[in-house]
Amino acid sequence: MNDMTFPLNETHDASLRSWVASANAPDCPFPVQNLPLGIFRRAGAEEAFRAGVAIGERILDLPAAHAAGAFSGFDELTRAAAHAAAEGGTLNGLMAMPPAAWSALRLALSRLLRSGSAHETELSACLVPQADAEHAVPAIIGDYTDFYISIHHATAVGKLFRPDNPLLPNYKWVPIGYHGRASSIGISGQAFHRPLGQTRAPDAEVPVFGPCRRLDYELELGIFIGGGNALGEPVAMADAERKVFGLCLLNDWSARDIQAWEYQPLGPFLSKSFATTISPWIVSLEALAPYRCGWTRAESDPAPLAYLDAPDLRTSGAIDLQLEVLLQTPAMRAGGQPAQRLSHSNFRDAYWSIAQLVAHHTVNGCNLRPGDLLGTGTQSGPHPQEAGSLLELTAGGKQPLQLAGGEQRLFLEDGDSVVMRAVARRAGLPCIGFGEVAGTVLPARSPA
Image (cartoon, rainbow, N blue to C red; front, side, top):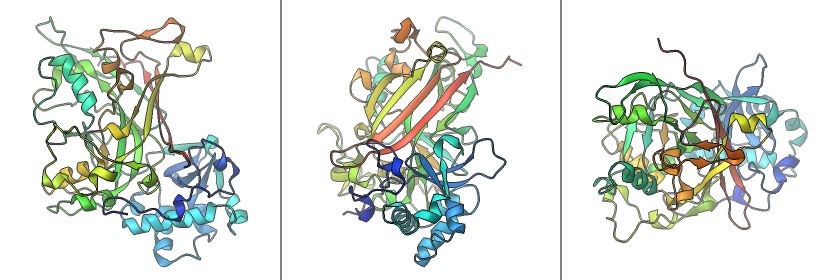
């Protein structure tokens, strides 16, 4: 197809069906064309976390499948990839292999799990219901970088603080990012205490210490790095996506009042490092290849500098990926009411592409390593209902958000749960989903 993206192959055939019946249901997020990877174990069981593949409502236990000899008939590269995935409790070993190995394992899994496979009987015993599983962060994350690639989010937030100059002059030239904290990244279902920190009211002369009062979420995608690059060796745009093992959903929780006081001159610190939640499943760029679309930019905007440009960027540099945020309050939960959708946006509206993030991150010689995580920054669309944070939806906490049952929210309250989902859809193609990332706010701990 082109230098930037994975080519289409037999795993993308829309007519494929799986012998796992639930994978064939309409709108199932995990059909045989998806095959995302994660780390799991049976909930409450005294057993090790291990690699698995989501297929319908089940998880294929990769170590069990490997032990059953399911991969013995494949070539050496596939067997090596299967062994790397089956060994240990993280995906770092597989991430360190070349993209050809990831693709070979995906092809093998497709053939093993599609209808007509000769391995159905032996692999049926290797399936675990997703409802019975619990998950762990899928990789040892060495470093975490959070970007700021939605121009709609950047402009909306800029208007709140700089009405006359909402977008800073560097935004259209350079992908903005900051180095985040990897140790506080947790898996979907994460519950965390409301953070404590310094804040200063606009009319106050001195700051105070206490619980955050303006707690927010941020709808993002996470980009897991595979392969990496040596120190001092930049990654060119043409090679950038070959360094991407896959994507997940990411909620970068934010303490807006702590952030407002601390962020100058060096940017976010305690306002971001208390919790970041990711979804359990990593969806490969190969699975998303049929959902590529053109990367666009206003004609009046500057063209990317040469190191951030590529011949295929404008034809296939973006991904048509629908995103949504839902909120369930304690009152909704007590009343048996489902979470209420707050916004709906699309990743194709991002100002910078995945390849551009990798190329920019490494252009100074910075070395990325297998398992490193990049956040895209809040993904907001051009319309108000497409905002990816409460900061935008409530106009900086000035316009309450009306919820079902008469409740209102300016920012998150104790007991609130936020759920984010993502799915790629296109006529005639299967639904490629990410599952969901969920997190719940606990009350602040007593100040020391």
